[in-house]
Each structure stands twice: as structure tokens, then as C-alpha cells.
Image 1 (spheres, rainbow, N blue to C red):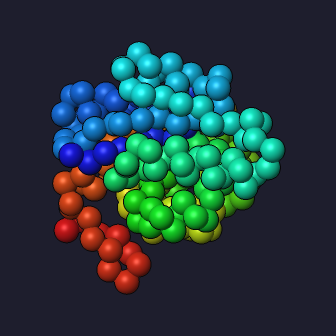
Image 2: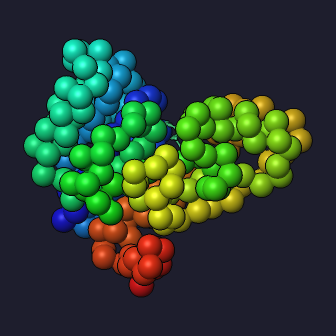
Image 3: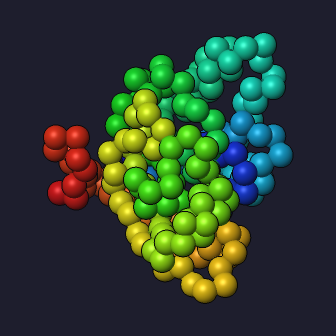
Length: 207
Ligand code: GAR
């Protein structure tokens, strides 16, 4: 069984998609052993509680320094003895020590087709605002491994979504979630849980 910890900051619709996929058997061989939020008001924590999943808030506000927060975050993650960390809308820069400890064992969902609309400052609704501002006609989502850069790790899966006339950032965000994020994030976890991925020269392939 793959022991998964999901890290969240907000609404947790991607967390919900993972919970549902485990329940329905779309994701096999996997147990969600914990949910960690940096924000005590995150609805994602309630979603976890409703499903009987251990959940904890580690907020930077409760620590004197970033270094102390980073230490506490890593300690908490380690206590869950996780095989895989899933960043599902987790808007905290992952400490380098955590990236080293969990090399190729942290994945992130990003709401664009990387390398478009990614990197520092591109998160949540801002990604969709930028895509509409540019006038692109195809957007989407990416699941990737997390390395030391921002959205630079090896790409695992991507799914494209069309932009429609009249889209607002909110409408586009919802379509990208429904048609891409909630599908490819569970798929990527299932592939990892069943040892179906391989990394060749830093690129990820399905075996
Ligand atoms: C999702 O759209 C996710 O892709 C995005 O935050 C949202 C979280 O929604 N993540 C990023 O922008 C990371 N750079 P959720 O809490 O409902 O899953």
C-alpha cells in the first residue's frame, strides 16, 4: 500500500478527487494517511475530517521563523511515514531539506500546461487570468515531480482544455479542474502506487 500524505492550503477539491478515486477504486493500492494544511481555515481540513483522515494544520504564523516552520513541517510529514507527498493546491515553498528527503516522492498539480504560465507568482486564479490576458486558446493542467525550482520538476502527466469565448478566470479555473486536474492527479497517484512509472534521463515515462 502506498502511504500518501496530501498537503493543501484551500478548498481541497483536488484532495476530494483523490479521496473519491481511492473510494471508487480508480486509485488502487493506496491509503491517504494524512492531510496537512498551512491554513487552519482551509475547507480541505474538513473534507479530510469527514472521511476520517488524520488532519493537521502547521501554520508559519505559529513559528518564530521560517526555519522553525520548515523544521516542524518536515517533522509532521515524517511522522506519517509517507511514501508519497501530494501537493494539492499547497501554496508554501517546499523546504530544500524536504525535497532532498523525498526526492521523486513529491508530486504537484499545477493548473497550466507547463512550461506556460508557471513559476513564481503563477498560482490559483492568477494562472487563468494570465492565460486569458494572453488570449491562448488551449490551457490545461500538469502533474509533475517537485524539485528545487518552482514548477520545474519532471512532468508526469498533462491534459489540455479549450478556452471558450466569454470565459472568466473563475469559469476557466473550474473547467480546468473538472476536465484536467481532478482526472490526471488521481491517475498519476495510481501509476505511482502500482509502480508504472520510470524516469529515464530525468524524463518520466509510463512503463
Ligand atoms: C488548484 O487549481 C491547483 O492546481 C492550484 O491551486 C488550486 C487548488 O484548488 N495550485 C497551484 O496553483 C500551485 N501552483 P483546490 O484546493 O480546490 O484543490
